[in-house]
Amino acid sequence: MGYEARDYSALVGKMEGFGEAILKNHFTLYQGYVANTNKLMEKLAAGPGDGAPTPEFSEMKRRLGWEFNGMRLHELYFENLGGSGVPDGKIVKEIEASFGSFDNWKKEFKAAGMMRGIGWVALYKDPRSGKLINFWINEHDVSHPAGCTPVLIMDVFEHAYLTDYGLKRADYIEAFFKNINWAAVNSRI
Image (cartoon, rainbow, N blue to C red; front, side, top):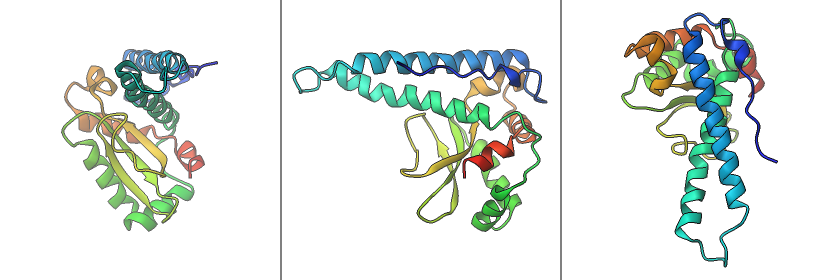
């Protein structure tokens, strides 16, 4: 039994600044990550053969991180969208404790989103220290802090904004903030 793609179609028409075409294309991309994760998991279930990993087995194991994390990051991203964008709840206090103020955090998170390159911006909670930390994730399978919990995910690959915003990533980031579902974010801490 494999993973099933979740249905995020309820977001269409609900979010200011996110057009129908870009969301439907994004959902299709996400469904590809789910399908590829399932294909790899099925092929890898056969194991490495005689115990020595073949080049094919090795590459499938490496690719699994890309496809699986692409699936999960998109799920977290879509699930932290569709809200009013008005921050509330426990997360606000935790952000203030970790960054000095909500505005300090927001400025840093947005600045990370404006960095050149493709990737993701993620607010993680370190369970050991209790602190929240913003991270840049360059590729799906790179730069995840070990043992930390993803709290807020923002996709800054071009597919997330190019259709609606062209090269105006800052405008997309503003739209993202207007649509954060803070209840979902709070549920992750």
